Length: 380
Image (cartoon, rainbow, N blue to C red):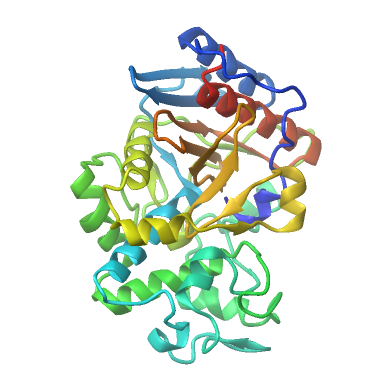
């Protein structure tokens, strides 16, 4: 989830959801339709349990042609990408190639400095957990406020060092380790550290270490391409009331903070494998699961939410917790989760981002939360 969209997360549902078994295909379809009714153009969702997977879609893939949402469509995963980057970093830790206590300056001397920022005091752990204090000044696609800006900047690209340089114009939000603030820039730094430690770009290491071993045949780094592979729903953004849905499918950038393209099936396989211990050694998975509270303003929206190393944990209304990582990027919103015992998992892709009002954005997110909670609680 990009920081500009985190503030639009949903309030916890007022009504409690019990853990009565029986959440079925019809329930999933109806909950997906509620997301469309709340203001989305389209949604696809996959829920996996001990009996297999259920898939449902609702809405349309294209507001002009009214074509249906493909159940296996590609989409931009946004900040769900951070879990992939964190996995590679923790694999390197397990191999002894770097340490969570290494400073940013140890790998990238002089990159983080100026206006009180000091890479000699920021560790890899701080970067992974958003406790570095670095203030985001991330350019497109996270700072677009209008359809005009989108059309003007959608093909802009920025190097990770340019992204970090922008952040260095600001004083840190707090001393490293003394607070929590979501920072896409921190993951730009982690991408550079991966490259320095391995000699290959972060996305090449993700492909080698995660994508190929798990057989994620529909997960890819788009590189310079601004489009999506077929099939896909078009991604839309609503920037202001009265303007309607703006097609924001095509754009570039996001890099290590949110650049991959995938499908619900591939993301489900990734998160269940990660949390099931297939990708990390026990010591590194335990480190990933160590969490701190998110920022106060987000705790009001997500009571009990905590953040680990590239992984978020949230409580379920029926008891227990689930872990995953969501993602928001122009045109697409992704939500993922695996229950603590690993028996149920979910991936939701909504092909709409709303910026027209906080109320509408919260209403849409609340509908997504309702689906996630009901599906993971198996509440029919």
